[in-house]
Image (cartoon, rainbow, N blue to C red; front, side, top):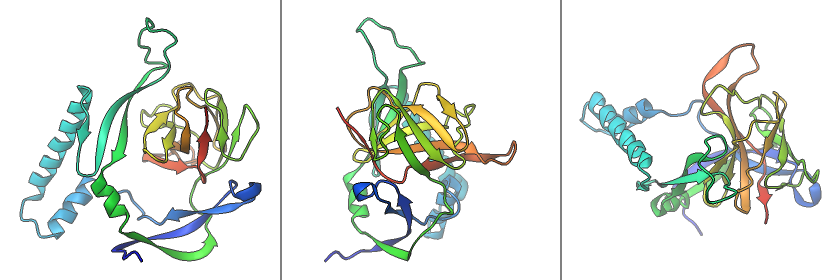
Amino acid sequence: MTNFIHYWKMHFRPTPFGKEGKTGYIAQVLSGKNTLRNDDIVRGILSDGCEIKAETISDIIARYEQRIRHELTLGNRVLTENCQFTPSIQGLWNTTTEPFDPQTHICSVALRLTPLMRRMLRQIGVEIVDNRYRTDSLSITRITDAATGRTDGFITRGDDVVLEGEKLKVTTDDADAGVFFRNTSTQAEYRVSRRLTRNMPSEVVARVPADLPPGSYTAIIRTRYTGSGGVTLNECREICSLGNLRAEE
């Protein structure tokens, strides 16, 4: 029997990817209202009894993160206690003499959890807040593979998928916004580089990268769109698919 040290609270979300095409349910972690930022981390360090001034801690963190970014610009892998950053290039070359094209070839960074982080996750149990599902959080509620019409999680590499939900519209003027596919095993993310075929609050049509490795994925939309006139969020929110997607050879 596992002895858990920490617990995550969760509630259920419905997914159309249940057995035999029926509705199933997946867990959604009940996180705090706001995403913690470096200033929050500094305050937490001080509350642990650290006697270093807050300004000094903030400066060290800023220099640390800047150094990681600098090493990545040089093409170096960076291993921290929490994860490994690995430079990667997304996109397909048709010939070995074809030049790099920033419209189709995207420089990116893949993240992989360290053994220390994975051991920590094994110490976390789950507390179900209630056994009813919640509908107050945003999610991609339905995904249709345009090539086959399937809605069971299968996606065709190099073809469109139709993502349905609420407030999905991607803020295209935001460099952090877009449609992504995150591998559920490696946590590597693959960004959709092609212009969205359709970009509406209730429906986004995106082209699955042709070079997406076979595997299990979560579809993610990052956007600052709120649906309230010209009001946008200060930072992108992440809207995820309710179930895993399958990319095959």
